[in-house]
Image (cartoon, rainbow, N blue to C red; front, side, top):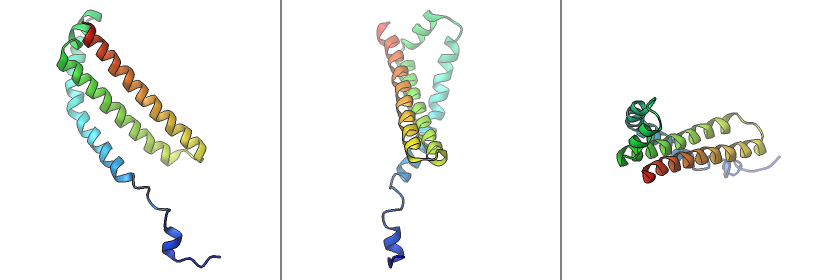
Length: 126
């Protein structure tokens, strides 16, 4: 039994200071995804079913490529943040949680980079 005050027992055990930034970041990406999704789906839908040449022609346009890149970055950032919350809340054990968070971050950003490089390859090769 210790003789610490309530403040001394609670000091250093509170919020890590990341919650507000994470909350705002997730809200900003979700708001950004509304117009980006609509702007991405329209040319993607038109090119769908048209074959490789139609896709190359669509994403050779700088505007369509820029929207696709911004959509991919915002979508994978939002996905990473959402999965991070789920992992932090529901994965027991510090080592397992840390491994899952690391895998989440690496996988989401690897997929984002692959998507951006794919769009950039089409844009600059045409």
